[in-house]
Amino acid sequence: MSLIVAGSIGIDNIITPQEKQEGLLGGSVSYAALAASVFCKPVHLCGVVGHDFPKAHLDMLAARGIELDSLERSSGESFTWTGEYFEDMNTRTTHKVGINVLEHWKPKLSAQAAAAKIAVLANMSPDNQIQTLEQCKGAEFIAADTMDLWINIANERLHDMLQRIDLLVINEGEAKEFAQTTNLVEAGRRLQAKGPRYVVVKRGEHGSFLFGVGPQEFFSCSAYPLSSVFDPTGAGDSFLGGMMGWLAASGKSKPKFADLKTSVAYGSVTASFTCEAFSTQRLERVTSEDVERRLVELRGYTAFAG
Ligand code: AMP
Image 1 (cartoon, rainbow, N blue to C red):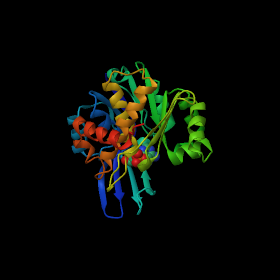
Image 2 (image 1 turned 45 degrees about the vertical axis):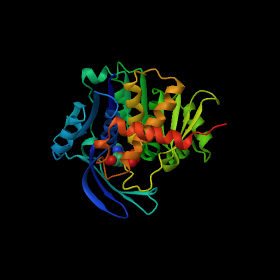
Image 3 (image 1 turned 60 degrees about the vertical axis):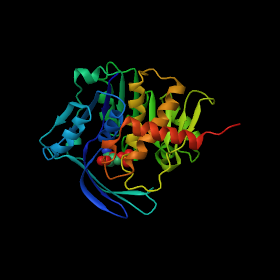
Image 4 (image 1 turned 90 degrees about the vertical axis):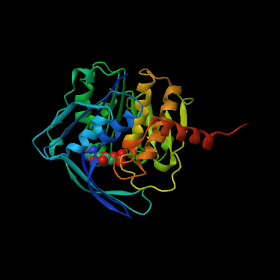
């Protein structure tokens, strides 16, 4: 089963307490598509790059079985983002965003991408997410991510988008801000009331919560325990891509709650690899066997008898 993933793609500059690296592959769709490609092929990537975008990044994505048939090559400059992490790696400051080619971009899906049964709207403006989903004629399941920027500057469009998706995947701080409550369980339920049947709240190193229909459908998943984190950029996007890639590979375009629980565990484990190197450097080399090994470990760490 094929998958369409749309979002930002660009050049990241990342500073951590240990290191600074520039000119890295970044963007929500880069991580989400790579993560999905661990499980399923083809993954159709929809995004826009500028004239300055390194060909080597596109070659790497193509070599991973990612179809670039819905990637626009613009004459403008590529999207860029510069961020810095501090001692605990959970806090991040954005220093600079160059919207560039994203400013006037309108996503255009190829016929094959539009026919995909599962659609992933990785982080980008709610306008771009709606423009994408309107072309996803074959999609039986649509998942989306968002960020604080859109909660603040495009709140109404974000609400429109939420009416049209099946699953929202959002991080803890943003979920609380968006739902206007400090109680995470209440936040999840309030976000469901905005439209999506399912909500996943990502809690970084503390795991994730999945909210389904009614109080019975609740699942808490651990994060895979890592003793060192090099660069958490894109972990959230990898989580989403891993979840959806596993669903597509399993032929589950109409997933039940139990399927979503399993996919959350796959998303969680996939995201753990992303944190082990800068940018997509570790994710690019992950195999499904690597993921399966960590999944067995994660099960052992969280299951108990009695
Ligand atoms: P995450 O760490 O999961 O929040 O994702 C980080 C990625 O999001 C980076 O690679 C950035 O290039 C990308 N990003 C940052 N700001 C934006 C934005 N305003 N729109 C789209 N993508 C962004």
